[in-house]
Amino acid sequence: MGPGFHRVVAGSAALIGAGALAFDSGSGAVVGLVLLGASLFAINRPVVLAATFAVAAVGFFVAALSAGAGWPTLTGAVTLGAVSNEMLLGHWYLVDPRLPRWALKSLDGAALVGLIADFGILAGRGALTWGTDAFVVGWAFVALSILSALLITAVWFALREPGYNGVMSATGLSYLAIITVLGTTISGRSLTVVEGSTLLSG
Image 1 (cartoon, rainbow, N blue to C red):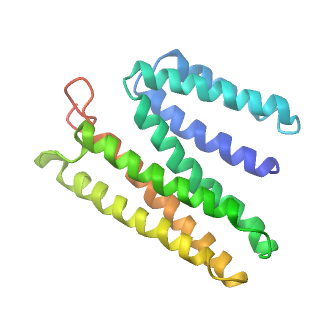
Image 2: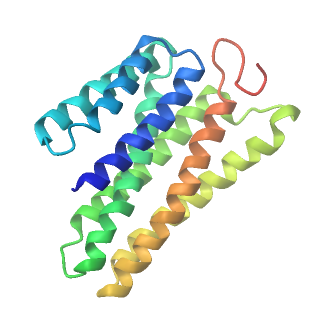
């Protein structure tokens, strides 16, 4: 992958990490953000770049553990990471649609498994037991989860179509899936119960 891919990864992770820091996730999130910023200066040094991303990921995970959100962090990372990389990698297949599609199919399968696991974990934490103050967000979470699953499944079937049209359709669908998965991730976590309250109820 080229520098553009690494910048997208760093920027996306920093955006979500900044949100975690805004809710007082501790020093782990600070370490993660600093390292993501530093990674921009190591774009052309693959080993250093990989190490920077790895340590940043550990920092964010430590922050998640301190907030009691270890499992949701893992499932969310798998889902968002898989569907985002699927979309980015799909552009290489647009250049040469004859490339073997096992990589895209693997990412698509990981995205679906991650989405189902994430939904189950968030539901277990109260995401499906919202009150009247979170009625709209609650139904948005359910609707976006279903739509995300349908889009990810549609990508799988599109990849079974030989030729350029199959890859083009899969890449376009993965664009939409990123939007719906991100919405699912944010809405679901705003509904989960942490220390007796939710983000929406305070």
